[in-house]
Length: 209
Ligand code: IMP
Ligand code: MG
Image (cartoon, rainbow, N blue to C red; front, side):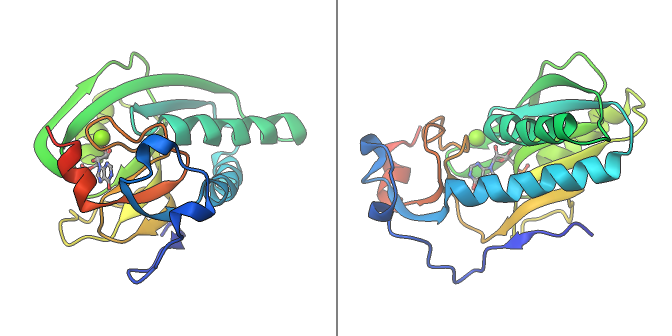
């Protein structure tokens, strides 16, 4: 079982004005739940665990866009740093796939997948809620008969809606609320926010489609 940093259900988070958030989002956020620095520290450790487990295997790193792009880039930077500073290293190539399943703050049954032209054995993802998106993607990938597929997700949500699916590597386990920032969006907004934050109800209305 993958280890993770648990953010408790009663986690109060941090006041917004203790951190730097863009002016245009100041009135939309409730609390900072995971500050950017903590995301980076945890990601650094995930990189170390991945390299340890991969042996000398070539990794095709597949980024699940759009929500996974920040995590993917930072995770790969840490993997690169390990590769260039130790006796052991693994060759790395990258690919990108786009997945869309969300409208407002609700998951839909309709998972759309666009792009990706190579087989992958390591997928970098933003968040697993029900697990439906990842399961759809995994069944698509298995048609390509990859040697091995490992999934790394920055966040996993504790929710009764979960299908039971768990990624191979997990950054944080988070409460069942809608989170934004660090590339996680609400109808495309809030990707340009460094910290992972809780959205307030007023903002859910303001950015509703
Ligand atoms: P699942 O298929 O229910 O696991 O949902 C996974 C996808 O839903 C993620 O890749 C996100 O795009 C989106 N998602 C789920 N929860 C959140 C959230 O709290 N904030 C932003 N996007 C979310
Ligand atoms: Mg989204």
